[in-house]
Every structure is written in structure tokens, then in C-alpha cells.
Length: 391
DNA sequence: ATGTAC
Image 1 (cartoon, rainbow, N blue to C red):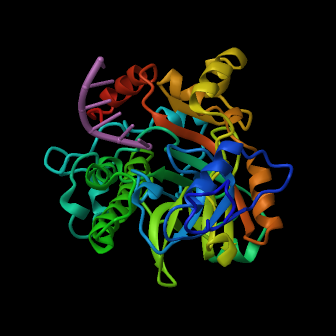
Image 2 (image 1 turned 180 degrees about the vertical axis):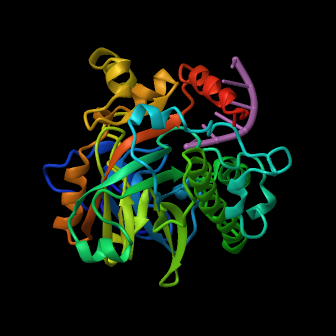
């Protein structure tokens, strides 16, 4: 052993980053991949083309290990993106935006017992966690009404029941407070160490995954009802934060979607299309594909640079003609399309590395982030005219 | 990304 590495006792796992030279990957994110590779039991780390630095662990990575590390998945266990077809009369985005319900306000099982969205609940609420149901959360989460744009694979789109011009709801949300509670319980006892009882962690983890899937259905149902449409089942719904037992090991996904023969929506930004892709990633990619465009700037940089570069007005009405509902100015800047990598480049990298095939794009019409109180008075007046209470 | 503390 060389004298430069006196403490080295086990070799690092392999690291593969699936990005072309033209894709900007922050060196901090690659360094985080190598830090993860050095963990006990780590077998292989695959960085997706949307790789960027996270808190302690990289985002946009799939990490295979013989030990289970809860911090690699993070607090939003079960976060994912679902696509729901919706049949709706087309109208100006501003008019549709004004009809979105308040998705910061949770559905209360008692007080809101008569809300029609509950129809999607089949059985008990996972983990009995009744707080925060039907809320979208913050950060990069959103509920979006979009239109199917370019269709690259008509056969695959047809199997999903999608054609150009069809409307869909895209829901990106996770397990809210439940996943955070599960990670915190582990961290308070074991820090960033592996789970001493993986089955116990996985039992709680699986509940959070189920809760996240239920919440995406509740969100879609709330919005569908508010827009006067019938709720539907999702045609695509994949988690990008979870642990999967695979080949006898623990495959941790953090901002990486399952890419083994499944369809995944790779989210663009609030001003660009998203790409529905068919994944066919192999072992070198840890059977995973990218989950979105990936941040190009930290939130702090996006806020500072965005305020110099954009007006609030142009962020609320995007280049593709869509409307962003976001009463939180800081979040609007943090989530500006220019704070993200180009989705076309991320998808091109997936294609070039034979990880996925594009099926179609979805182009935003209305992206809901958090209530915009400026819009509320008009909505309330309209609802009062129709004899409805605010929901 | 989160609930909570500042």
C-alpha cells in the first residue's frame, strides 16, 4: 500500500457518470459520488445526466450496496412523478390556473370527509399518517396541467393511451412529513451509518412509498374535481427516492428513477417540456434513468442571479405560454427554468448511453407550485356567485 | 424537501 493512503482498508466501489462532455456536471456532485463509493459495502455508483450536489449525498444517482444507508435516499422517501390523463375543455391557461384548489391546505379525514378526492383511497392511509394528505409540498414539487406534444414512439404512446394534443396532469410529490420522520428516527440513533435492522427500516420505508403514491392520486383527484373533470388512474408513476432489494443488495435511488423496462416521466422545468421515456438501463447504470433536468445552480445562486436576470412577470408566464401559480417569490426564482440544465441534453445523454427511448413530450399549460393570493379574491367571488365555499 | 426554530 502506498504511503499516501495509510488508512485505506477497502477499495472504493466503481463510479460511472452517464453524461456527455457537453453536459455540465458540477465537480462537487462527482466528488459526492466518490465519497459514497468509499462507504463500507458499496458495490457500484451510477450518476445520471441530471446529477447535482445534494445535502451529504448526490442527487441523480443510483447506488448499489450490501449495506442499507437511509441517508442516501434522504427524507423524501417515496417521492415520484405520476402522469394522469385528464379530459377537459381547453381554455386560456390563466382561467384554468385560477381554478386550481389550495394544495397547501391538507385534506382532513374528518372535516373534509365529503371531499370526492377520497374516492382514490383504497383501504387504510399508509402508516396511519393522516397529516398533510393532498398537499403538494415545496421545493421542486408541482402539479401541472400539460399537453402531449411531440410523439416519438406512436406505438408506445398508444399503449399508454396517449396521443398528441391529449391533456395530462403531471404530479411530482412525495411522502411529506412521513418520510422525514422515518429518516430522522434512523439518524437520531445511527447518524449516517447503515441500518442495523434493514427489514425494520424497509417496513417503514415501504409505508412512505405507498403514502407518496396515494398522495399523488389525491392531488390529481383534487385538481381534476376542481377543473370539472373525472379523476383517472395514472398511466405512469415511478418513485425516484427509494431503496430496492436487487441481486441480494440494496439499490438506493436518490433522484434516479427505475429504468428497467418501465416508463418514466423525466421532468423538465416550469418553462420547458418534460419527456416521457421508456427506460432500458442495465447494471452499469444500476437499472436507473434520470428523474428530471437536474439543478444547474444552487437555490441561493438561482435566487441571487435570477433577481438580476428575470422579472416575476416573465417567470409567471413562460416561453412555452404556460402559467406558473406560485405566490412565493423566492421559490419562483429558485425554480426558474434557467436554474436547471437543458432537459433536451439530459434526454440526449440517456439516449446516447442506451438507457432510455423518448416516447413523447408533455408541454406545460399551468404549473401549480403554491397558492397565489393575488388570484384568490377573484376565485372566491366566482365561487360565492356559484354558492360554493372555498376549497 | 422537511418541520421547526430563529
